[in-house]
Length: 489
Image 1: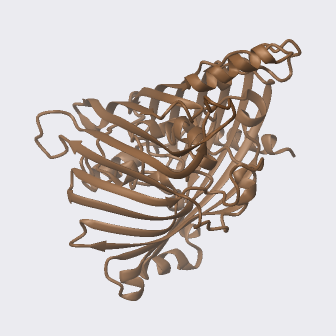
Image 2: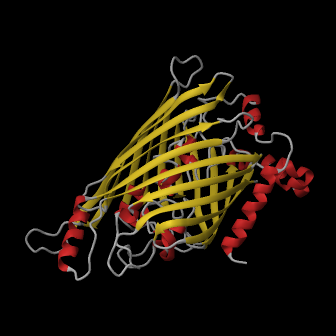
Image 3: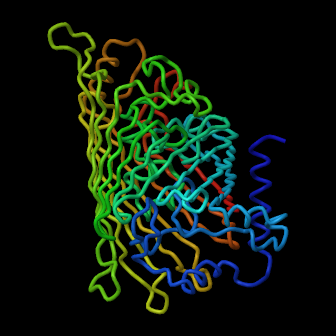
């Protein structure tokens, strides 16, 4: 059976669960949150910040919030055979396994129509070293991936903003492995090891609902940073320092090896192939520095307004990079010193239901810019709205609509003009790629969710020529439908 067929079969099984009569299992998470007194303002937001988005989804692939569910209770005694999980927890070792199976079909436009299937197994292990070995304030963590299938953007659409956030080459891969030490009464945190930046930087608690990869690690980062930056599926050796002087305010910065794939980034080899299992641990490349400051407001009980978060940050990669503008004297390609970018985001709750403050609507807005003389993308914007608990009896379900825009830099457009003048075949001039996504995450039971996703891509690749068209016409706008099944143990 093909991977796509296996994925579809798995999704149909999940749909059967959804249609079966029974108790309102999707209320379990909301009830647990209320029973345990978890409210907006508690440190349960994605990215490790206080939760200020009432519409933060229950499930998020790769950027999960601290409030999690598991289907283990549904299995009764079989959920922990031999009691090994409970034994490990008593000794400070916890683990979670997230399984994602999804299928996408390009319905029209793009490079070619047809289906693709992807599966991801994500194993996360955490060790409280105080409980395990008496090392006060220390924790350890590891994340491992097993990825199978093929991606829709790579093989069907040809767009920049990756259709699925789990799209990657098939591999068994070590993602993160790090040690963290808290200092000064848990106000300063030092983390060292192999890290992923997409779980901590420019994270919107509302945008993590959406399936497209750009709503996590924005396309301007993926396009402009060497090897796509230290983000799924790649990580890189790093040191991260986070300072939290108050529950609402945080500062963090990371010093990271600037070439996650290792080796020569100018070689025509996919960085995932240069570092196929995440075991290369490059440390000798020019470094990448990322820093941000985040402030959560209206988080305390009785605050006059609704909660929100504002974040400002930036990044810089040292070393030499290729410029897109030629040397004025020789007309040849030139190397310039370093690359950089800055960004900002706002996450804002705009409505909370009077009878259940854990349900309501949130919006997000993110923007980022980079120098246009050395980057494919010089400006990025995205925005969206999500509503959790919109329908009666579905308190844990989340509905969302989002838009992302990736603008091609002026220097890249100028190169397109030169290629069109000098080339024999028609060459379109790129401008921008726009993405619209609508999705609905339905929580079927604790630890189980089904999520249909619809995406519309305007000018895939910014308006590139279709390699399958002899006349050099642009790749047509694409309509993509996807179905994602998520389980967490």
